[in-house]
Length: 64
Image 1 (tube, helix red, strand yellow):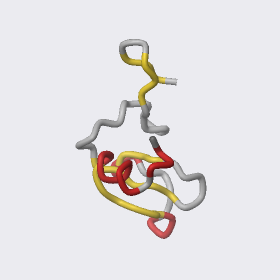
Image 2 (tube, rainbow, N blue to C red; image 1 turned 60 degrees about the vertical axis):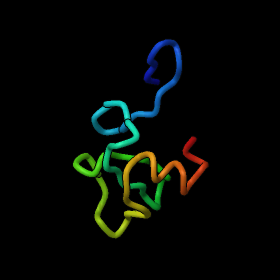
Image 3 (cartoon, helix red, strand yellow; image 1 turned 30 degrees about the vertical axis):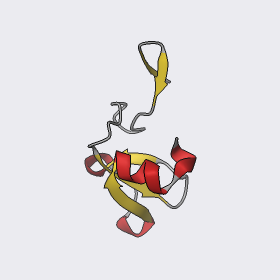
Image 4 (spheres, helix red, strand yellow; image 1 turned 90 degrees about the vertical axis):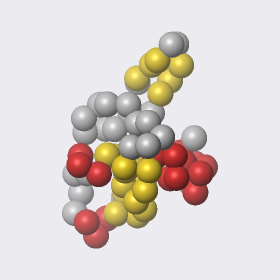
């Protein structure tokens, strides 16, 4: 769990870096994870959605 100023902050599973609104990310169809585009560990056929972290969260409120 990644915390900033005492608050839980979403992060990329493979690299562990925080996800910021402007970061380019993919979501996957298997585990419903958000990962940086450069860190995506699955085959392209498992990409569910692509965009900035801010766009993904606004389209899929489950990630909030």
